[in-house]
Image 1 (cartoon, rainbow, N blue to C red):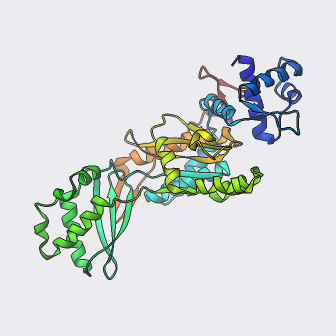
Image 2: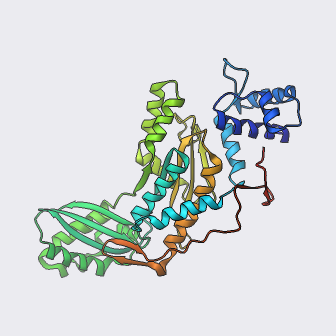
Length: 383
């Protein structure tokens, strides 16, 4: 692609994101101050259409970008936008006001991303595999039903209900909890699962007549570990927009059905967990089947430098990228910083408490700025 074609494609995608209408050569020349004639722009648009980057609705002489055009646009866009001071302040206030149990922190992040994008905000919680066990508590729910609460080294809290063969008092459950903590604390959950019941086989006798209950709880940890949690907020906005943008209602329902699968969404964001910057997947690139017109943006977050989860947005191709990309990037930074403040974290009961969050905004940042490819600020956005 020539530099002229790239300039035309970027301008056309940007205009389409705003208007939602097919874009003609005349508006590109007038609105973006191009140094070419409308005839030259039309010729280049024809070439871009042959390259599979534009399509031409039969009712209009204008063009609309394809999924492939959005892929190229986003690849070029990710490094260009810098978050504004106002956005930073809004994000920091959301984190400061959130109840600071980890689950609530992640949920608040998903809500913020949904509000920023007007689509679906997603946060993939830390996976239990790869984390070490910090504490296990067993709580009687009713009769022989017990709730196991496991807290990992990442601060994540996992819950799983276990059906026992007999009724056990809460006092006995405390004894089993102490035994499990003495024997499993500090071990990687993956190692516990790999070694199976052999991990405790030599010491289960310490529980006496409660050894069968200890075995049942350990089996639940080994063979049926806690599910990975994914927080999805604003999905109703996404579904409404899909219906608005898709003429074929049955196709819209297939797209929505795919995106309602938490396992599918978790698998997409699991792949984005190690992204060093905001990554994107567009249309059929996501699933190779039905998600044409959908864009997923995502980035990982970390604990002490180790990637443990991901956050992002699922929306239509026409999204306010200039707001969403910097918000994603900064949210990842804040969340990673909060989770890594080990000196300010203490466990109280089953809640993760954070005494103080050090978040500082760079006060010298003016209103919206854009970085050019050399990393310098410029007052205008690239065309």
